[in-house]
Length: 276
Image 1: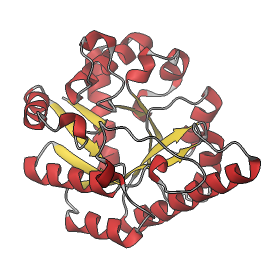
Image 2: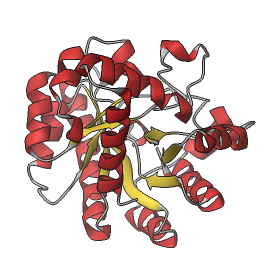
Image 3: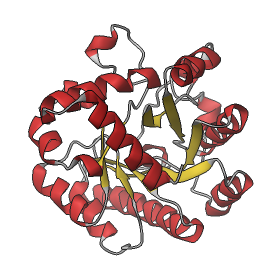
Image 4: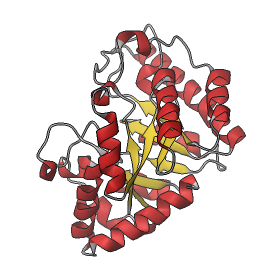
């Protein structure tokens, strides 16, 4: 048994064969948590979880790249959602809260939410406004997680120090730093605050061996971030939950432990954090 703790089967990339992908995963003992990136994709995670039931779960939230500002023009991925679906002027807390409560047994987390400073305005003044807007929306979603007593799935790119400072103000929040690509010092700070670190196909692209090795297995989650970050061994261009096994295999090699041990402990971790 494995749990892909970060999938996006709610994205357009699976429009034609969603049933087949989910069937393939469940028949091979891989459960799935689908993650929202804005309201429409969050709504789809709920619909998918309700349709398939046991073994398929949802998380809802607004990804930082979907936070509307006039400070930078973001090019959206057509594999994610249509241009019409992507339109969302501001974060509407009540709308997301209503969505979560409408399917409280299937919505296991708020996510993915966080900070992303990879693409940013060029002037200092615009950059600070850009960062402040992301921090504001993140804190709104953390308040929602507190109110609903849900863990949080964090996206963080080129912003770990800022995220760590924000999380110090929210000691009640539990969750996972998905697709962790920070440094060892930042990893230790997250671990000290009780967070899990999520690893996916990025470990085949970046040298994260030391971090993977030093992060305790009981604080590790495995994920695909599908349709992105395909493990090389999969031999295809589009990722899917079934391929989380290759991430588990790589972690087992780095830690010099058995695949079975990685599968057992990371599954326990996911069930504990998301209460599934």
